Image (tube, rainbow, N blue to C red):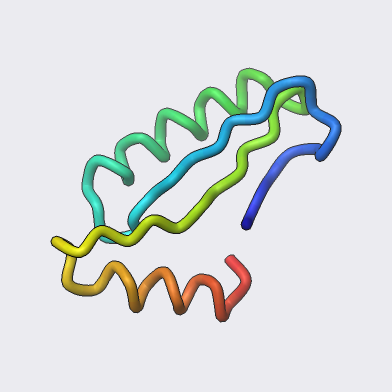
Length: 69
């Protein structure tokens, strides 16, 4: 589980995403804007959720986990 923002933030947003998914990439841009607006009041937690329809999603998720991203 990867997160940004303070662990004691009053709001936590949990996101499930696929590194090869165009919709997930678009949502990430929106989440970044929300995080910037909320500042330290928001904690964002990201979970890898590789979709089988994306040929390289699983290997990208594994690489991110290995790298600690």
